[in-house]
Length: 190
Image (tube, rainbow, N blue to C red; front, side):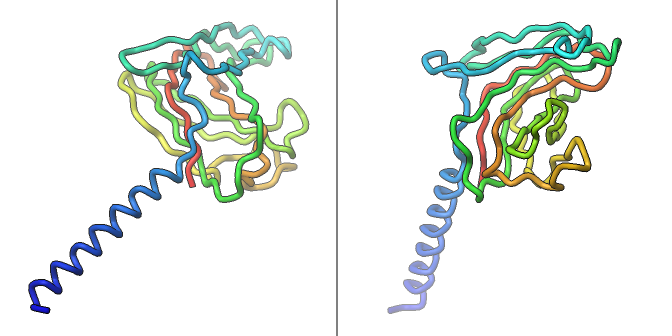
């Protein structure tokens, strides 16, 4: 075999392996939610009113171009020991241990929002793990590794085990502000 053919063969092998790796990488993301109107929408909306707060808001489903989404909007107030509005989805089954994080396609009003994760060890209503993300007026994909989530209490494990996750929440939290955030896709990645 000529030297040129050997290089061509090596290049082809490299190209095939690279393509296979890309395909595996894309397949490692597990779709959790695309807000397809034909599927069950098992999201709950609630505010700090459950504990005496005065924040108000709403969540609704919409469509923008080809993107289905859920919008969380309202006025977050820290008055009366409050400070959040939230949408939450309970997982129907636990994730595999090899899931490393969550990916969201989001847009919003430029404010900071949070992903709250509850696990089998978050027994009290005020226990959760959280990570923040910023929004902009254009859609963008953000990826958050579970090892960057912070526990709300020193009584919780320092890091999340993905196989213990019970629910995912999108939250406007912790300060007085107008909230408006759209989420069109949620994936778990390995």
